[in-house]
Image 1: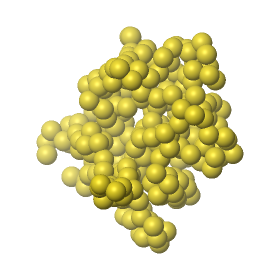
Image 2: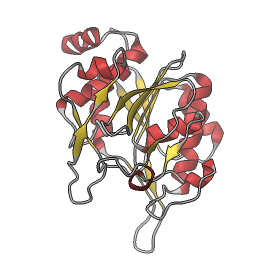
Image 3: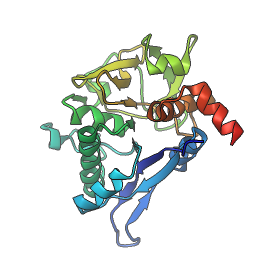
Amino acid sequence: MAAKPLIGVTMDYRSARKDAPAYCFLHAGYCDALVKAGAVPMLMPPLDDPSDLERAVSMLDGVLMIGGADLDCRRDGYMLHPSMRILDPRREDFDRQVVSLAAERRLPLMGIGAGMQLLNVSQGGTLCLHIPEDMPRAIPHLDAMDPNHRHALVIEMGTIMERVYGEGEIRVNSMHHMAIDDVAPGFAVTARCPDGVIEAIESTTDWFALGTQFHPEHESASALDLRIFEEFVAGITGETIGESQELRLVA
């Protein structure tokens, strides 16, 4: 049986404080979902030396860019919005290096939440910095009182998202105030909220890359959301979903 693919998973980072040391940490749902999908997750702390990152990436079959706080939009030519809660600079420096290296090497990549937003801007796309102001007719995409807030999803046919969800009513979790505005060249929108907010993208080139604005790894996700990770792993191994599931059952 072929070896399971190694997927590098970026980690969140919090600088030291007066009452606590610095931390690298990760929501376990990312790793659990990859394991269930038939991959081996390899955690990637925010390395400072680019040569260390290149060595780490050279051993991987794919990369998962996790979600988290907001990208520092000043790096992409925007002004900060008062609502923003910015990623730690060490993490964002590292994440931007990872996306750049993955794109250069055409290493399969999946981005979730802020990871999808970074994938888009790194390839020439733009961001909506605060949905309530930039898209005033949009439904709420963030409810501080309800971590299980959900909304409907409209799928584009002939895409990975269609293979995941098929037909019927689809609802996904929603916990963001930023979103994709202009989609990067070489990418296409594969799912939107009915209000028009972009919820998923995938590459239209030879680079296997996709992203979701919602969080299929989260405890508020549905069982069906796991299939997004299965599609990612299958895209790396070249297997169909049925084949990969059968191999795991045999194992």
